[in-house]
Image 1 (cartoon, protein in one colour):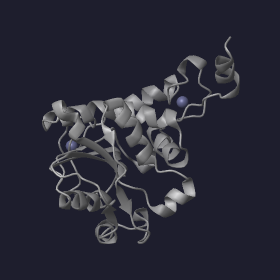
Image 2 (cartoon, rainbow, N blue to C red):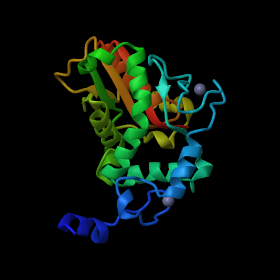
Image 3 (cartoon, helix red, strand yellow):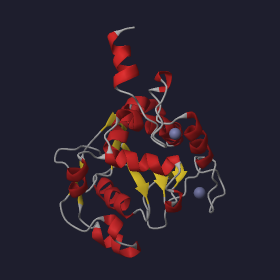
Image 4 (tube, rainbow, N blue to C red):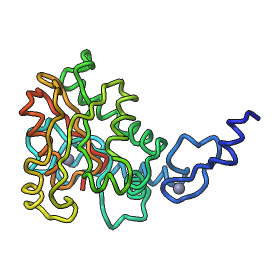
Length: 242
Ligand SMILES: [Zn+2]
Ligand SMILES: [Zn+2]
């Protein structure tokens, strides 16, 4: 047994993100155990109440989120399902900067992203496509030490061979979005996002990613900044839509 394998087998044991069960060595690249992966796949078969399509094919965006081509997602978020692996995964991503979990999510998001890039005619010019995350509030970033959307974005950039661009910045002010409801969220993000100086995105295609989209207020704040910078196409992507 090689040294690395010894450490992987007995020292750095990997646990299932959904239930905490220790994963067999052969599955150490995966996020879930075999039971949780079945439940995860089930969650991905839920149908959208609006378009009736299965969630992984649904393109519906919240009404307030204008200016994006579509909003693709992997599952619908239900707070009552807190015991289910999909909710555990969101929680895990938020609290741990773990490459195994973010790479797993990236692989799950990749098919929808590739479809959207093809649909808007950027398949042959992937060098003009940029992956950008909705930046996490600075307070949260300091508290947890990382930005989960950024980690997923970076992993997704690797999987889809697209450039990651961490060009959006969020000013340190305002209340955390999750503490506000509906219309207040839209007011709260006004002027909060800006583009790093020297960012050139005119005529480009941007894939904007956030972990969870509820009202779409944060995303819309970013969309406005990107449109003002001359971005021609914006594809929105999230792990879960609430
Ligand atoms: Zn499990
Ligand atoms: Zn839909």
